[in-house]
Amino acid sequence: MRSRLAGWAFLVPLVAYLAVCYAYPLFTNLDLSVRGYTVRSFVHGGAPLVGFANYLTVFGDPTFRTALLNTVLFTAVSLFFQYAIGLAAALFFARGFRLSATLRALFLVPWLLPLIVSASTWAWLLNSESGLVNAALKVVGLSSVNWLTSPDFSLVSVTIANIWIGIPFNLVVLYSGLQNIPREVYEASALDGASGWQTFWHVTFPLLRPVSAITLLLGLVYTLKVFDVIWIMTKGGPSGSSTTLATWSYELGFGNALPRFGPSAAVGNVLILIAVVAGLLYIRVQRRQELS
Amino acid sequence: MRTAVGVLLTALMLFPVYWMVNVSLTPMSDMRKPPSLYPVHPTTEGYERVLREQLPYLGTSLLVALGTVVLTLALAAPAAYSLAKLRPAGRQTLGFLLLVAQMIPGIIMALGFYGIYVKLGITNTVWGLVLADSTIAVPFAALILTSFMASVPDEVLQAARIDGAGPWRSFVSIVLPSSRNGLITAALFSFLWAWSDFLFAATLDSGGRMQPLTLGIYRYIGNNNQEWNSIMATAVVASVPATVLIVVAQRYVAAGVTSGAVKD
Image (cartoon, rainbow over all chains, first blue to last red; front, side):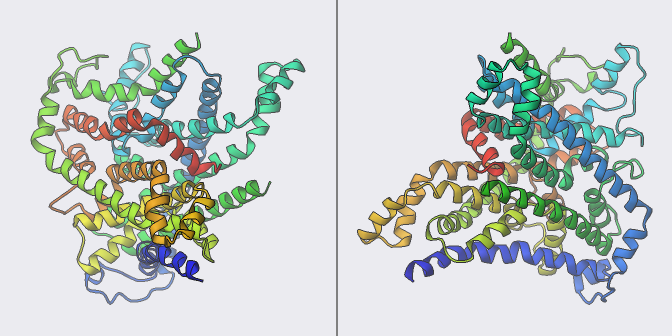
């Protein structure tokens, strides 16, 4: 009995914290999304309930379709390349060679850098006039590309930067997954005369499936949230061409002189709905793995 | 042979980081010329400007990051002890909530915090920013500390109980010291996340008297006469904690990343 009480006592601070710092902001966000706030009523209160009007405004806005499509493209393409490159690197490092541990640690750097640092570095690499990428294109005789200022390339550019940032995470998790595959499996495969490629497709890849699932789902949850990289590189522009739900929500609430908190919160809540679905999927997969 | 390929791949991966350092040493007069692969006329003018203009930002970042670490550990460590060793009813629900909490997009938290802070009149305060930044780290810290503390043998705690140690005593003198690695990992990540935070700073502290370094960089980028050597010099300075982390605490970092995703 006493230890049960103590158990609760140790949890109280965290539970109170979750209520104040998670539940309350989330509730505020929900409240914002169903009221017609102006800057005045935001400060002084008394905004009228408008029900789903903000959501209807958002859904009716042509930017919504663009943002949704961009979010899907940005997420899918980022995940695919982060995973593929991360897995290739993990397989490479898994063999173990001189310096492999040090090099693997260095691979982590892009992931640990503040996002504003990575994003501004990429912005300068891709700068139209003075960027290294365009200079390199010129050297090989290609014409330069307006990476960040052309609507055709802005989404590609932010996706490239985001892939670079995400590779280390995939590498580390997949690498530890590879370490957990017993050596005997490979030995058996080699005895059966399987080639390296066959071993990968018929042994390594299937055995890695649980870890891959977790990696991709976590990646999905992280990528949906991405805001900094896009905002710092392109502000979602030009003319919305690289806007995602996350940056649009920020733009509506904070990007203009005239903030529109209601629609901003509405977009945020749509995003959270998608994230929660992804999150529940993640938890289900993890539970199933713990059982098996 | 593999080592050579590995070095090459790592160099390729880290090229943008090298480029950041390269640009930070390039004089403004060379900036609009075709870029050269190394600083031909290296200059420290970017860094001198950082020293002149960014020191207050740097101090704020340090304060915010350290404050976040303290708050995060103070909240997460006792809770983790309870979840791992005292095992009260409802702990599964709480663990589930902590997992879900990590999935909430930052922009939603930022807007919610902004609404609350405006109502209470506490925008643009450092401790307000610390509180918001801690939300990035607390769920992760609680979960990772739970898994570290779960590995403290029950027998040791039982022996302590027989000797008359209460739960608090066991927590302070047995569980905390033996989860040192977990505490280091949680502290490192909270520091890094708070140090790197841009979104909360931009929404909650953009008019404050004390602003973090991420906003300092953002200001530089927003300037019309974009002085990229100063921007990149600030970026280099902002990257120092990450670099130190890699060098000093490599194994903790790897442990942190993996245990976040793959349990045991």
